[in-house]
Amino acid sequence: MSVLSTNLIKWHKRFGRKDLPWQLQTNPYKVWISEVMLQQTQVQTVIPYFLRFMERYPDIESLANSNEDEVLSYWSGLGYYSRGRNLLKAARMLKAENDSVMPKSSEELQLLPGIGRSTAGAILSLGFKVKAPILDGNAKRVLVRYFLIRDSIDLTSTSKKLWKVAEDNLPDKECDIYTQAIMDVGALICKRTNPECPECPLNKNCLALKKNKQQSLPARSPKKEKPIKKVHWLIVQNMAGEFLLENRTAKGVWEGLWAFLEFEEESARQEYIKHLPKDYVVLDENNKLKHTFSHYKLDINLLSIKLKQNIQNFDNNKVWFNTEELKSVGLPSPVSKILKEMK
Image 1 (cartoon, rainbow, N blue to C red):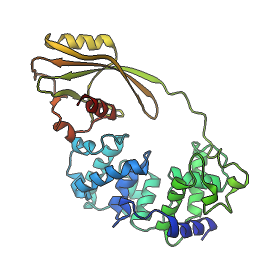
Image 2: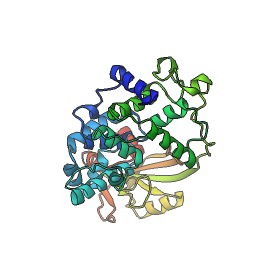
Image 3: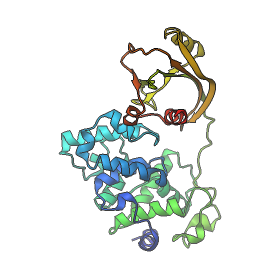
Image 4: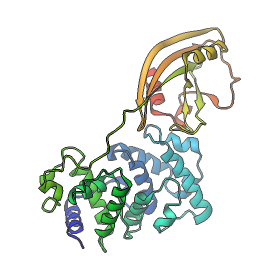
């Protein structure tokens, strides 16, 4: 066993996290759901979502039997909605092809939508207690600093190097403790900024600390400025207090979610309004809302109107929702924010 893995396991037995919801009476399914939720998302944000999700979907079978609208309603606000869609697709595949049982090999796990090598490794290690490497953001940071890997971590060559390092340092025993330990040290001590090196169980052998390079590692390629996309939303209410939403059918970050009517140009929004009943009240106009994605920024111009007569003849992807019905469908976080403010 390497010095790295020995020290991590010793540390975790004394100080590591052992009471997270997915660690209690754990199983491969719980690990899978938690690992997917934890991608790009902080632990404290994930916990309430995980608890609600597990209460509704305690196993693969119950998830596979659900529908996309309901699954995304439990994902609303968590972001990166393709994760929720992929969970549903994978559960249906497991039900149809594997009797609703999680596979026990990395190769089979990676055939499921949304599961890459690191997530597969976590499921095997934490769920099945099988020796398998992980390389999530926390593990990468620990390994990069410990072994003083100076290359940019977004390079393919660096990724290959890190996977080799991760494999070489896997212990033969207590692999589940080691896996949780390297994630915990990365999250709690070897943080992206202001790492708490005096508290770290690896500080005696950490090469980055010896060279005083811990703050500058991991190295990353220069970030490009995020482009700004400008859109115009139309918020339509009727006299019953229902909201008109459209289902985002196009491939994209909000695919399958329900959102307010969106137009690329103000002229297109005004043209659409011309086809609505003339008798309406403008509730709010020229409000602005900004939302940031991983790869671009969204600049939203808002116009809110209330129709004085009810109409139903919209195309299939536009539906009236009352406040109770809105709880059962997936909504992008800006839509949820607006609805909350309009209560």
